[in-house]
Length: 111
Length: 116
Image (cartoon, rainbow over all chains, first blue to last red; front, side, top):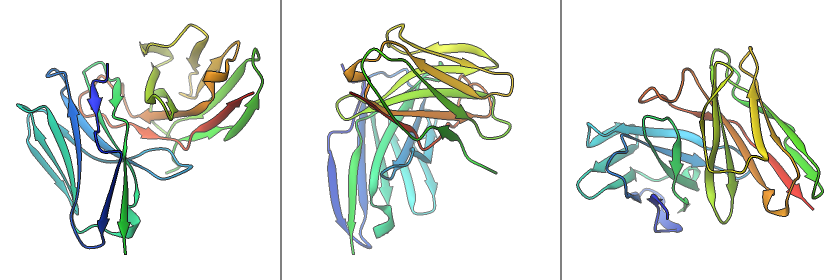
């Protein structure tokens, strides 16, 4: 049973528009949430994170929103750029440190 | 500062063989975690080593084992390889144990293992 779900396997947006990637989780005890970006033939690269005591964290073009009541996490990229095209994984963590990843969403940003 | 390095990058083995993968963490990082990525199962946690001790373990059979050396470098061993072990094996390092809330893991490029 998947504890972390990214229901959209792929997403295509136009350059300059907003990209919204979504992630749902089942366990309300998760206390730390992360987004990673992965290019082919490379390992995941840390993008942005948020702890359960916050509902929003911003870093440049990237903003992560956390809705604890809905157990929902989203990543907004504004404006989207062609270089953002990659696979995006959300990950959640308990204080055991183990990361549980979603299945990933492939984002394509068209010029 | 150099990132996480993994060797070898690519490996082909046959069923029944055993394999050892190596991971060198970012300088100063003391925690190393291992993950398996497959198309069907996604990224799955194998185990974490911190200060030469296994701190946490995922749901993988005993054929998967690891160790960490005093310089924080880590090795992962898979014995009696099966076809289903074909995957990208990723290691990630962090400064301290990932039990510390907010401790970010930084990933290496991975070792792609093909079992024939």
